[in-house]
Image 1 (cartoon, rainbow, N blue to C red):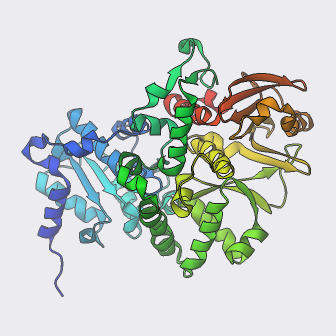
Image 2: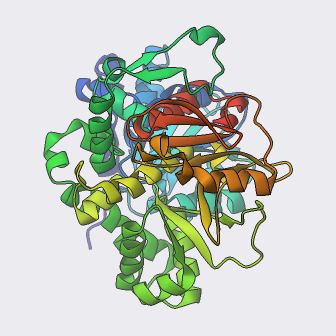
Image 3: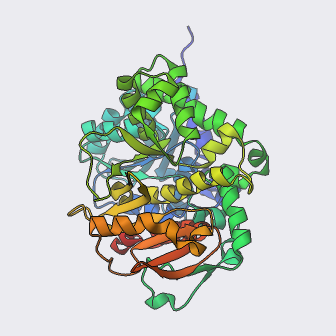
Length: 493
């Protein structure tokens, strides 16, 4: 049997690290440099440059959200800041040529060739690190052995990465999560943000979460792009390619969903019945934005309850779905969880499975709108304190409970319709919840927000002030504020 030689491995490393040659003038290449940078790039790059803490940065997230591109952009940023190009190593561990090769071996080949010492300011990037068995043990060992080096790893199987980094890399890894594109990022990627959104009022003195901070220049055009976002807007590559947009089923389903369901999760968790897992995910995707029960899921997907609970954990860990827990009309938690809301982390996954939505699909757009709005909070820790309320005769789509005392602070009723503006009685459920839960008024802004299709403004009803805002504008506002400001005041959004 012919074995792969070290010479072949190093030649591959040379191919993947073109900045090593010609004094690094080409950097990561014009094509990659021209690719838009995620709004997450600046804090990610700053984290890598911070050498005060001896930890590896682990960049996690679902497939195709731009982790590799962001890692390469970080390399270019280091080159531009004056770091020698030969002080950077990049290796994609998904490459067959690297299969089974320890991280230490790749690193030693790099160090020997460029004659770096253990005290050199070296930056090492391991892409798709989950393809190396027990990667976390290897990486932790390198962090300990080379304290002067800066290690960065990326991986798509978020659950295994987070779990293993906690167990085996405690104190040695810093997690950095990269979710799908926000609606604000989507508009930036297609260069329509300044065309469709304008700043309203004196921004310098406006509160960070102010709903009046932004306004739509053309709500119909903004809504049209919002529907595009629902169909393909979560993935940078899809946003930049009309070919992929015309066939999201092939790109998103085959290259993203199927790889996670058919390869990543089975290999990580030893799942034997792949079709069973696939049926469950298809059921969840179809019902995104809806309340489901364990009984109904078990019956419709044909999965036993105990297995179902494990599968749900796996799907959440892989960044495919997210559950929202239920509270009652008094904002109290249930002792036994039998029902919950389920959301795709990216609404365009539903379009890939069941076809694009059009402006005429009002009922489907309604659930996808709620999914899209909820997914904006994936970029903030506030998502851990979001619930929905349902009781006999009423419901509220989103309730934020204060982490300290679990008291409700604000609520959101998501609509893809202007009807509640004209028929305020449709909001009686919100009034009932506020009264029965003894919800206190937030620090600023009305406690009740209602999203619409196109109407903005405030109305008083039964002693409460209701703030109305178009769903597309609210989705933009959430993403723009959370990503741009990243401060505690955003918890009041």
